[in-house]
Length: 342
Image 1: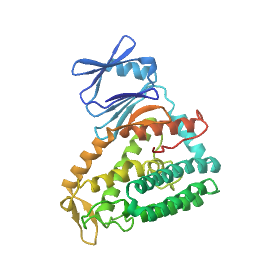
Image 2 (image 1 turned 90 degrees about the vertical axis):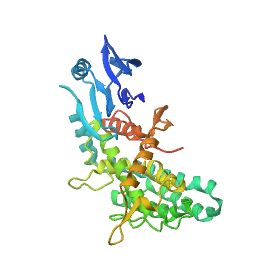
Image 3 (image 1 turned 60 degrees about the vertical axis):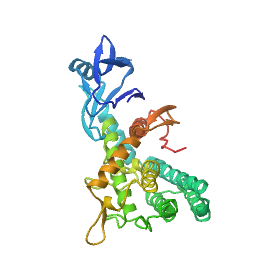
Image 4 (image 1 turned 30 degrees about the vertical axis):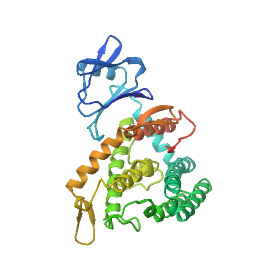
């Protein structure tokens, strides 16, 4: 798959080869030209897995300040070539300036929370339409999430905002069991548990969130943002606070709905989990293989992105919003708009 989004050329098709023909970037697949883009139209080239680039094109990119970024086939950040001049220092400076400005930090943190709550409400509202037998409890949860959304912009401190976000999460997960449609008694969910997960649903949710966090870290690294400088999540050594901020708007759409689909379609069974001493439940190697194969397939699905008005693979959503976030921090746009599912 090859996509140009926000002046960034994304190449995900394995075996692709990029080279320069005069002032045009050529992307070849199996010896055939698949795409041709003028070099001056490109701000960044992003390659996933086994994608090759000619040394001459790489040299021209670094000469002209065009970033070249490598990820592995699973989307984990590998390296970035940025040449002599780049704006990353100024971008990181802007990142710190927002952190030191309480009002701007609160405003940005509220955008992540709004994204999370609205997408959680959408998952619940969709279930109200699909599962009328659980309508009463789900409608109650949707109303409570509506109130949380209205309360977000009333908060005057980050701690108060975290309280709204935490309450919204508890409401959402109280309703989560109504979204499961399986007659297998093994797959039960009572409440969100982590470190360790206590049931197979929580095991899947934790694994999905860990994969999504890595995707967000990679996306932020790719645009030159420091994944550890966040606004909603407290700063701690080694903690990817900004990635944890960014993941909030994607949890319900990219992780929760994916896990529900896996369970409801019976793609996982009891044999895919290990029960550990102390009550922990974890995906075993067989379960992880099934999970990851479905996760990679899901990332290739495309949706229409309302902000950039373009079709985007789901796997590139964190990359798109990392770039939108960088634009906001640089002052290129007045506000950061989170991803809202339709």
